[in-house]
Image (cartoon, rainbow, N blue to C red; front, side, top):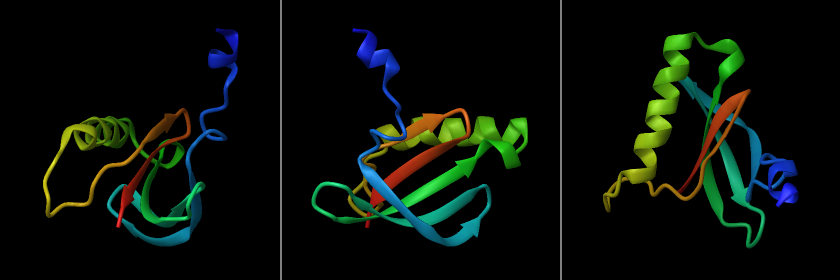
Length: 93
């Protein structure tokens, strides 16, 4: 059971984050790929250290909402990670 709490969530994240491609609003868009299989994904990153408390709460709310949003014409949410330095949302292309 202690191994569950000792895990590093960033290391166990199933996606590699590649260089930044663009910034829009509070999010930075990165290209990414799944570690197993190499499928391309888009990764949206919010850096807590550069944002305000209001922006951080907005990012957390968006993270929560993306987990439940389902629509055939919108990028599909596949995984997410929230750590003390930021929020990561990889989504399929």
